[in-house]
Image (tube, rainbow, N blue to C red; front, side, top):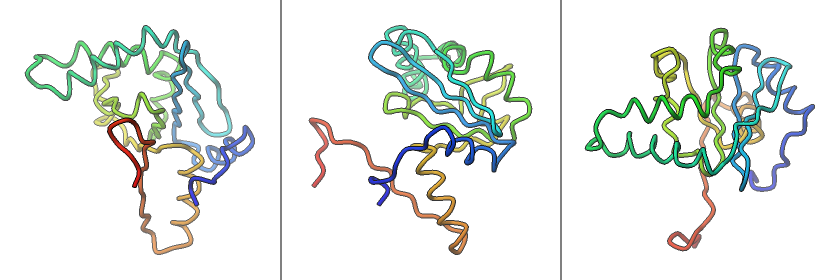
Length: 168
């Protein structure tokens, strides 16, 4: 089952990303104090510190609200602020050569309107194909199943229960 899949180690990550050398993989993690981004393209990867989680969460909230509530007015200032925070210059430089972006958000960033973040005045989802995946490990697993099957993949996204949402 997907729940029992082991996470990718460094070698596994390199194998997955090397197979799709023109795809930019962005995997985010917002911890209690600090936030990090694992950037992988081809057989190269690096970890980028994004800064303090307490400074990033308000930017995330403003970007979500700007898209979710059209009554708030012009969404671009909040989206552009989020783009600067979550797509740092080192990543922006790699976007030019990427044919597709795989966005792997953590629980906090799942609702980030990533495709609407503008880089150079163009929303990411307009300038590039953007794929969302809950993890690179699960994406890799689904890709192998699709390659052996009929070309179609069924995907179920499962969130952890909280006080208002319980698993039955």
